[in-house]
Each structure stands twice: as C-alpha cells, then as structure tokens.
Length: 210
Image 1: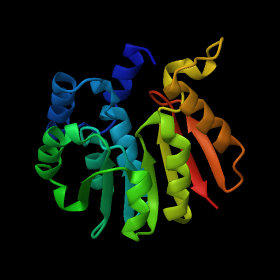
Image 2: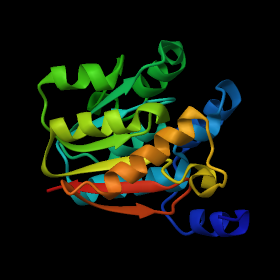
Image 3: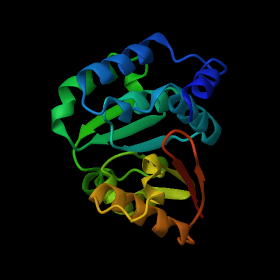
Image 4: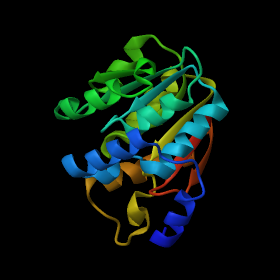
C-alpha cells in the first residue's frame, strides 16, 4: 500500500486516540522492529471485528508493546477479557505499564509465557484468538487456538503475506518465512475452518471454526 493511499484511509476512519498514538510512537522509539505493532488502521479493524463478533474471551498470542491488546479490549462488552501472552520477558518492563495505564486495563490480563503451552491450562473457552507471535511456530499456535476455541469462534493470524516473501522465487530459506508459508498451506487445506486472507498491511488471515 503506498503512503498516499494509506494516509487517505487513516483520514477517513475513526481517529487513533492520543493514548494509542503515544504508545505507537514510544514503541517505534524504544523497541526494535517497532513496525510489528498493529498501528492505527489494523487497530481500528481489530476493534471493529471485536464489536461484530462480540466475544467474551479473547486470546492473543504475542503481546509485543500491547497496542493490539488495547484495541481489542476497547471493543469488548461488559465482562469481556483479553488474555494476552508474550514469550519475550524482556518486553515486560515496557509493555506492562502501557497496558496498566490504559483505560481498558481491567479488561486485559497480560501474561509472560509461552501461549502454546500455557493458554490451554487456563481452562477458558475462547471466542476469538489473535495470533501475532513467533512466525516459526504459527502452525503450532493455530492448532492450540483451535483446541481452546468454541465452534463458531474466530482465529485471526497476522503477517500472513510477510512483506510479499511468500511469493519469492527461489523460495526463501529463513525459518520465519518457512513458518508463514507452512501455516498458509496448512490452513488452506484445513476443512475444520472457513477462511479468507485480507491484503491489509502485511496480510491478515481470518478463519471461523466450524
């Protein structure tokens, strides 16, 4: 997406809000790979999808700076909760204050740990799962997500176009690209779900569990 079109889109949707804007800036100033945060456009989409699906419990695999968790929590109704896991404990000192300082802090449970291993132990049935963690283990995260997701629930997976690397020839050999390609091929043939890929930012896969 070119910058002019992106600017047009951002000027014709709901505003980002001061707190999220400051979080986005801080993420890009203080963290490596700040662009991994969802950002204004995807953040508003996540909030809208939550409004549409009306989940009670959301699982997020990969918190990073907390931007997407806050956006999803903004869309939740009374009593809703986002359980968000971040495996990199070095991010906690940055992320936890931003989550706890947000207006939706009471709707977010921020957990340092491996969601693939630990989320099933919560004993929670989820209505929506957002996968945005380690690309090498996307397929494993997806299988875990289906195991804790109710029928009719949704899995969202970010970065599934991976800056266009999924189309490169010869095929890339790095483990992150291989992880995304493996996931894309796997879910394309998975009859347990209905699925679609949106070419938004870096690609967003949406799948509904049958």
